Image 1: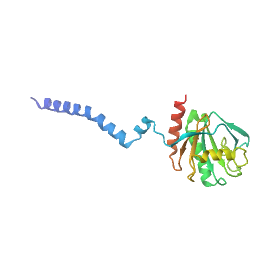
Image 2 (image 1 turned 90 degrees about the horizontal axis):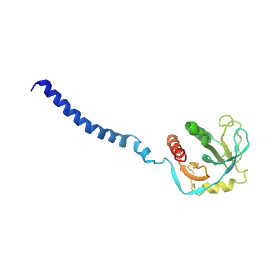
Image 3 (image 1 turned 180 degrees about the horizontal axis):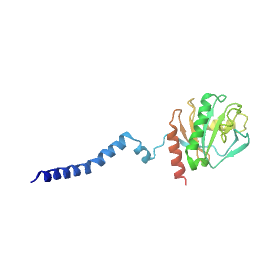
Length: 194
């Protein structure tokens, strides 16, 4: 047996060995070092509200035009601001805007709402957050809405809520939730609702 035949035999044996073990190594890497399994199992990044809370259609105002609009048949990202719009509020408005924009062609299926417990001056914000909707304590449905959200939210962690197109409060995202996770959840929900 020549030396080159021995080398060919060894290379064939190594090739067969790699053929069986490479898929195992790749699978192990995907499961333990990526979010591959989470996405394939459809695990949500927020906390599912159970049972869901019926909110229904919401009448609000648009922040830049101050015109009254009804929010209906859209997914709605909501947060509650207990004071005038401060630095945290501005960051949250920015975050909701960016989440919506990141949805690309599906962004028109998503709206943004902030609920204030007092009247705010939006002169500085109206150009930055065009399309943002708000409700304050001057609205007749204000107390009704706050009570509905308080059913699932009693602490002061300033979560982001998600309403479905039928007006049901179905998810909440605690402060500090990665926006990418919220985007993935909304993309999955929109895809499954088609």
